[in-house]
Length: 253
Image 1 (tube, one colour):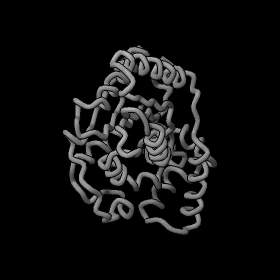
Image 2: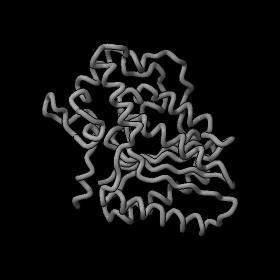
Image 3: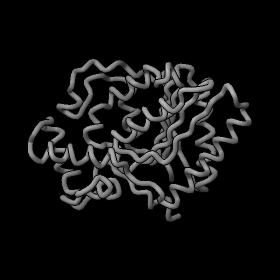
Image 4: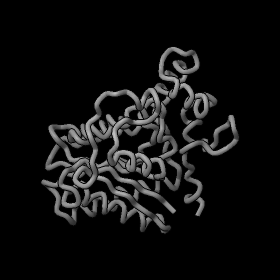
């Protein structure tokens, strides 16, 4: 069973091209992996994602003080194997609601909280600006601990629906091959961030008690982020860590 979660940054909901592209990607993944696949899709039209108010309780206590649909979205992301970030290009950047979404899980970037998960990025424009959105989404995905296995840029002003479908099938096929061959790795930026954070938490140079406890229980044992990403066990207790994921359960099928 493969669990896919998508976050789409368009207020047009299911009528948006961002959502259309996500649907096509999920269909192609389901066909290519030849195994059961479940999906959960979230967008600002149907899901309430309130603005971050800067309370910092997420950093200090590990929990957000706001109660809205982000609680469900976070739970689904923790359960996911593959996460899709899909966004239209707004002024060569991501839409404001997408930035709000990332603001609401900013504390996860201190913890590599989604380590072990794979990410697919979709950017949709009329004619240009995709590269800016793709780079921005990749940066957030890496800060959150994921490995980006593919970035797809769609320019609707120069493509028919058939052309969009063709590009998506080809790109997703390449992504599936890459996943099956385990042809992916953590980035240099992730390694540098890992060692920087590790120094902070080992030497008590900053961070909250909640963050210190998380690192001591889950991350400080590893010499590199690559080791942490690929290891699904808490070495201290020899039990599964609270959320990492191993690809073996479907790559071996």
